[in-house]
Length: 388
Image 1 (cartoon, rainbow, N blue to C red):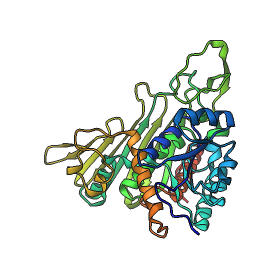
Image 2: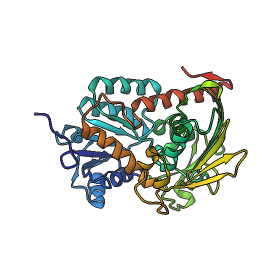
Image 3: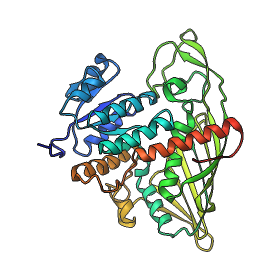
């Protein structure tokens, strides 16, 4: 007899408890969904993290989690190199999958996952959570309703400073764990996904310029968790050559003659996590800053500009559905996980998997992999690359 999945009966497993795994757990709990168990790279770490987060079960391994018939869906918050093999194994084990981005290390791997997800009929999600800010949803409504007019320019940036110093270190710096792209794959993919989500437009060709400002970094001799900022002594570091980009500027030719440009960097002092976009159309412009996420700027030629503050009573239905609190009550990064998982789990509970999902799927993750590979090729060859 098929198990009827509800908030009370669904079995959720989370894999990986670094920076982003606990955000998944919190987002699930805020939707009334209990995490049954978690897995880590060692049984000892799994037990420690399970105790810290009040999760009832710690699995001896990822394989043990997949073997548990009580697990219905797996959240993958692991390093990039594990996404493809773990997502593949989870699908083959009959589990629904929520995977962090990037979906895989190569477009060939992500294409395999798209195909396998279709064959197994399992719900598949890529965690492009930034889509779920209410004012991003509002921007999408305004653009796709035609209020901005014909689109001209998509421009913006995604800037951080957490890798500013040569002593800053994280596993994402190592191509074997994070992939051959770093700034573009890690944060640029969010910006690129947002532009397609907001406008509905896909990229036709790209031209990219990369720079690595720290060709040699100081790698700690012992592991550090992301964003811990621990201070070590000089003798605690080893020199490590860096082969991934600190910076990228990418010119983009979108459909319908729309032009785009984005700068992505992780060495910009003072920019903690600033995803910014501006969309210029024939009637108006709009802009959104991820460090001030509850505001949407709307620019006009013949009337005063506006700053719209997040207030569900003043938003479109699409944006209102992503807001849980009344005007004047700010919503931020943790809320995007809650809102995304609300869509995902409501879709699972409804049980109609033939219906088009209203959340990012493996197909979206694969598109970003194709786009990122073209961007990397452009940077290496110094020419425009068409998107296959």
